[in-house]
Amino acid sequence: MTNSLNSLLLGSALLVCGCVPRIEVAAPKDPITINMNVKIEHEIHIKADKDVEALLKNNRNLF
Image (cartoon, rainbow, N blue to C red; front, side, top):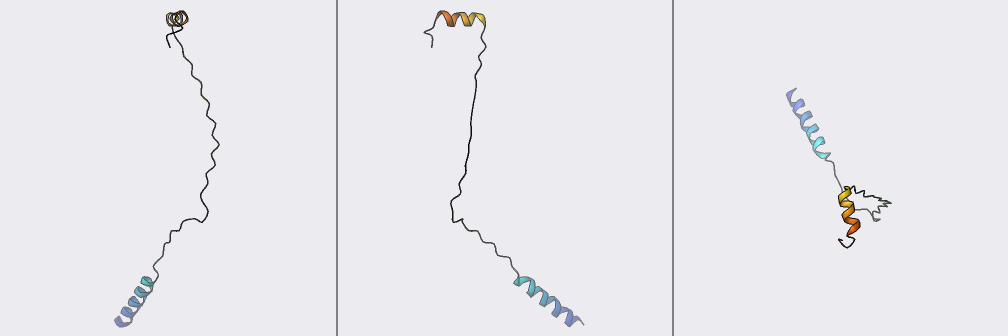
C-alpha cells in the first residue's frame, strides 16, 4: 500500500512540475498614441492698499 501511495505522490509531483506557466512580454507593433486636449485658463487678482494704488498711479515708471 505504501508503494502505491509513493508512486501516486511521485506521479502527481511530476505532473505539477511539468505545468510551469510561461510569461511572455512583447512590445506592441503599433506605436502608443495619447491624445490630450487640455485648456488652461487662469486669472490673477491683486488687491492693494489705497496707499500702494496711489503710489503706482503717480509713478508709472516703477516697473
